Length: 465
Image (cartoon, rainbow, N blue to C red):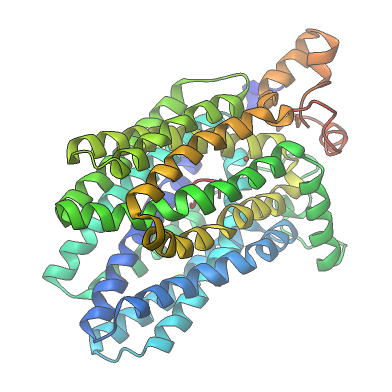
């Protein structure tokens, strides 16, 4: 397989990418604090804060699929640097507006929309960059998950200190600086040559096909993989009935019953749990990654169930920590599966469909949370979400293409060793992609539909809230 020629996880270049992702995540978790504090300080209400945040989310979710096509046609590294520089400029402008006291809601929404567009161009390239930087893709995803989780823990606290000692404008300035650091790290990054068959995504030149044709090809490739669209379909249920209602209702219930400090503790416990899940994903190497990840998802029931049952703060924090660990472990299993099972020349587009599908139903769940809580009571809605959170992994495990998908390196090793026809060829499995050093012909052979019975964060990119 040529594994000896691959780069280790902790190379200079992966270290630069690791820092870029961690610092950018730190800035992103500071933004909600800055927006809320800044807009409220200038006389706007909660609706304005939600509108400003929605402007970013809407443009990102609506355009990320097109961003995937662009990323497969041009140099992902240059696109990511350009997106970071755009956001450096927009957040610097926001810092000036908030510091000068000239805050107009529509201007903030336009800035948010531009940030969402830049994010839609940036995000698809993340999926194809990790496999080019590290031989141990699962280890790389685990390390990035840990860094992003730690940043998520620290970001709101840092933003709160900056608001207290400086101003909301100071938080926006710090956020702009995180994009500058990310762009610098990516500029210093030296990507190794792309795997054979990587196409334009690896060589930085536009493909010969039209934009529409590339978009259609991405959709065909997405539909051809039952394990991929199967997870996204189940995740729509998860977003509507579990994560969407859980986030706002947990916040309101914990703050109402125990105060904002208790909510901060519960939220920190959730973040700490995601760090633990990342460490577990570094050590555990299941042969069927999505099956192991689906079992880990059962842990999420502890979070909404503890709050819905009205347990004490300690019990809610413990439930949040367990839930965070399970979600984080799933996220690494999913991200690694996508990056290793999908051929490089369509990876950015399929990752974009993954992101769009994962996020599409979250606003629906959040919008329904309030009316459902008014009609049934917030505690009953949370307990219902807890029950449905048990249905989600059952649904994932019920699909043969998902539970039976064998990790790509295990399939590759079996091929090299000649260990059995069915396992070595991937028969009865999912569309197991070749190793990153396999010939291009092998990659294209695996791009067809999965055989019958065959075996999917955030920046947030995987089906992870």
